[in-house]
Length: 93
Length: 141
Image (cartoon, each protein chain N blue to C red):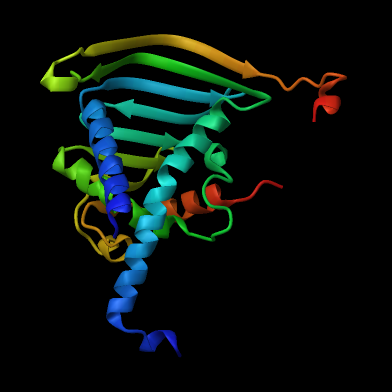
């Protein structure tokens, strides 16, 4: 077996390469989840139950403190999207 | 690692740090339904619970060309595990209400650290984690 003869350092390099590749995929995965949640022909309900998000103070240029915020979300909203085909859509593509 | 990729890595780490910082000070629940069916529940508090009711939300997401398993993906969550641990926070991922794995402070080094390669990621149930991996990688018909 070729693989079993692989140098340990090569294995470590390969593993760290895999970890880096995976980490670089993270923003793409988040983007795809968001795309899916607001995608076409979807009906997604977001039900917030006393959700409080504390946005920390932002430090701007020259160390100036800009602002902080506390978002309180309570309630439900439904986001539905529909894919419409228009007669001239084929002309445009 | 060259300067550009090191800088990109630093930005990603800073972003993760900021997100984890925000999550730590947040609390409450968010339930997401797709066509009236529960898909995902997020509970924020001293610990974060991510309950995946319907893995369809994640189906087909990621690099389609690779056949990377959930366990391989968990290895890539090492950095997240470290950051969560340093901030005293943990995320539990549940499949249909049953705990599959935990990342961060509450993860205890067990035999699963051999699989995940990290002391900050604990597989609570190999069965649930494997089922979750299967649900996510399952392709649409």
